[in-house]
Image 1: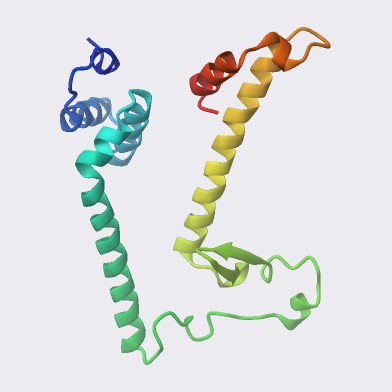
Image 2: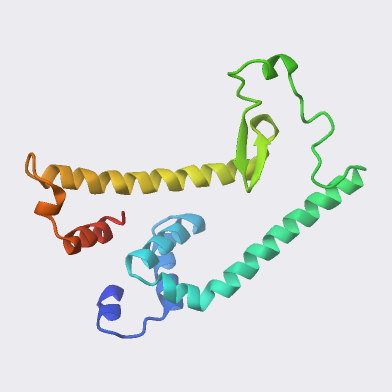
Length: 182
């Protein structure tokens, strides 16, 4: 019996067991731990078990993120202090502003981007800032893809010159949105 069927009939699902099963399946199939984890997260969403996973593991995950960030910041600060620099300051010679580029409207290196509530010049970004922007825009792409699928499905099914409200009820539209994840 699929986990979704157990949820639908009201049985308790052991989130730990489900996660271990999904990750184990993917690792046995040759996936990396990371890819297996991505798969397990997708299955948690698909099976409607995200809330159960957060109830079980949320506090642990949050504390791990905090600890990981704290260790990374500590290492970065110690590295800077050992070199006689203020923590968070760029490497000596690391930031090179080309005054000629500043005068050009099309300078890529001098464009400003909002990263973690701070404006940062593109040329001054480091890996974690680039990763933050990549994740942000990947999420935007995924959201846009789901919306595009929703509108495409409507456009394909609706008769010419008919209003959406004439063809679909509110309930039908909500069901379609849930189905497509839009």
